[in-house]
Image 1: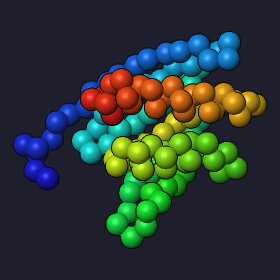
Image 2 (image 1 turned 90 degrees about the vertical axis):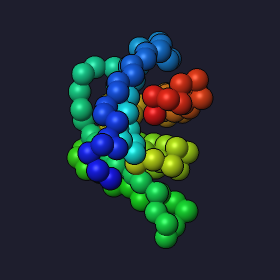
Image 3 (image 1 turned 60 degrees about the vertical axis):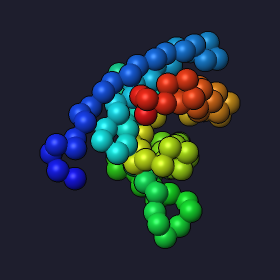
Amino acid sequence: MNGADFRGVSVHNFSEKILEQVVHFHVMKLDGGFFLWVGSAPVLSNLAVSLNSKYDSTPLSTLVMGDPSDTTATSLAQRLAKRTEKQVFVSYSLPMSDSSLSLLVEGRIKKELELHPEHF
C-alpha cells in the first residue's frame, strides 16, 4: 500500500436502549478494518483485535489490554472479523452481569452492519 491508497478514518456513532440500559456504539472505519467501542460510560476497559488467517478458518484474536478472564471483547472481535473479513479492534465496556445483554448488543451490531455496511 502506498500513501495514495489510504482513505482516512471515518466515524459512525449510534445508541440503543437495551434491557433498560442505554448502550453507545462508536465505530471508527480504518483502512482495511475498523475499531468498535461498546459501552454505557466513556471507559476503555479492554481492547481485543482479530483478523482472518489463510491458515485457519477461525480468525486469529488476542486481548491487547484488559482482564483476560473476560473473553467478551475477544470473542466479539473474532466473530466480526469472520463476518466482515476485515481486521477488527473491539473494546467492550459493559458489565458482564447479564449474558442476554451481550447477545442483544451483538444483535444490534449485526443489524447496524446490515443497515450501514459502509461504516464498517
